[in-house]
Amino acid sequence: MSHGEQLQVGSWVWRSADLVADTSWTVVLDESERAEIVSAARAAAMAGLSPSAMTAAELPLPLLAPRLAAWSRELSVGRGLVLLRRFPVDQ
Image (cartoon, rainbow, N blue to C red; front, top):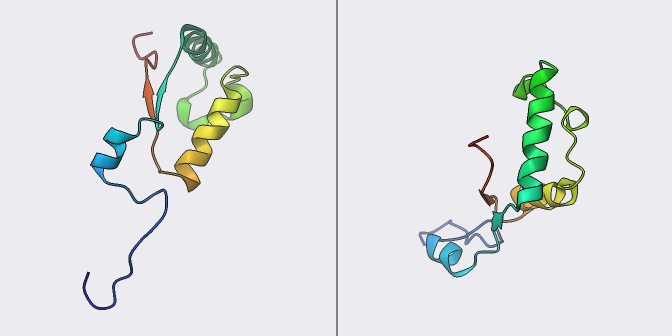
């Protein structure tokens, strides 16, 4: 560390080795969560809503709502990343 630099500390400061050792930032969606996302996305598409114009009220995800809140916190004040596995991009 050179003169004048400060050591950064916090959950947002990590190295790739830290992420390999701790997989708590990885989320595996189950079938019901995948189905909820697909259903909400299809309903939004049928209503003609574009992804950039949608609000939470227009894309209801009651099953995922608590998890979405936790992911939002992780993104804003935590590690700054969440890996979603099994996201239904195939549907």
